[in-house]
Length: 228
Length: 301
Image (cartoon, rainbow over all chains, first blue to last red; front, side):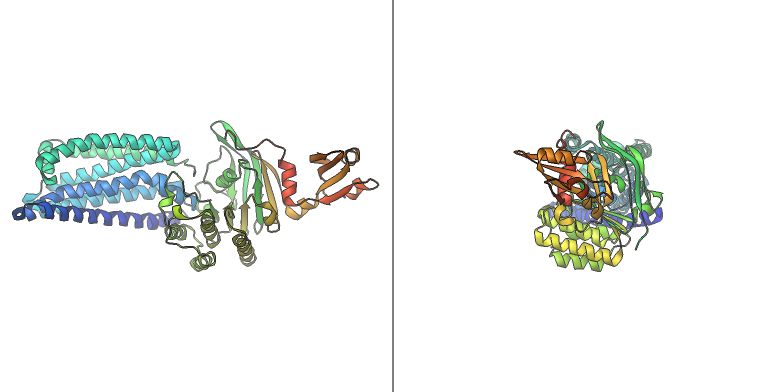
């Protein structure tokens, strides 16, 4: 019977994940089109191809991480109210989280390989890092969402305010860098240069461990979740 | 006719240290329409949430067909609890379109009847492209009714299904409920505040008062045991000396007492030879007599 519950969740949540994957690809295309229309006419191809190293992580974070925050506040309560169990909802959510992170990593590997010398990143390490980053951020977002559903709307307000502050700090740092460079691809080159020699795989593994810890914390909240 | 029963034993629920459900034990027998009635804040929705594992009980156990309900897919597959939809819910259910909500239901309810859902949508004239946030209170009720009936679950629970429905739609709902019940023999539990017009539909009634189970009984038998006795105060008091009086009203020297007889008892034994008038109570009147004197609920919950 648990198998039935897993299959139902795979079917329903899978459709949502497919939509997210589609929106990710659409966002990447829109970024590329924007770059194509704003790049110097003699460097359009180079700018667009190099830009993919920035478009892919941005789109993957946008459509992979943000929905995770709302999953336990909006979607999961419906699934539970329609007779699904907490463990199957959580289990399938974790499966799709890993699948989406893997999709991001593979997509990043493909665009970097196609980009060749124009791409800021190359090899398996950068893709693995993106996989770990998406997994970590999604897990962190889920904990926040589950916690805010449990604590109430003020928990949600506090959590969103915290996220905004974090985004402001990161956004200003990256935004200034991007503005100084003039284009997103430039920012990625700077990031790649900064990561030169750093133990990237170690960071990625730490991200995966951190993500797993957040997932464990999320389960502790979800396992006794009451529908409001 | 299904043979799945749902029961709870010694269920209690605390919210922030306050007990909102207190030691409730009951069995929902298969193939019956139950009415769940109680005042605001009496604990009706909390009880239904616990019976369907949507809310964990602080104490006690819930079983369906002999199996625990909590986190048990095979038990949960017998149950549909179509909750009241709230368009202003802080957690964003308003973003869903009706068709998206119904699609979700079609995936999660194993006996979902898509053709019946389509028929119900046509009967109620629902626009499935509308977002839940844009629906009127009556339309929200219609969506919950469509989900409940089309789920074809052996035990189907509706929480305030007629809230916001106009009188025509309410009549239509009760017709559909009886049609479905006649055809399938499913068990229904209907929680409602509009008792009078639903009284004829309920075969059994569950009354919850201040978090406690007041009674669970056959509706016709229950109604046959409640009477209002009117007359001069001293005459009424004398007649009611050996009766359970739930409530009384005074008007000048005239008094009306709302009394409950023991099963098999006859009201004539008490009023014979006295200048008294006695008449039976409707389900709504007897509910008010039983629970109307209590302090208003919902405060401090």
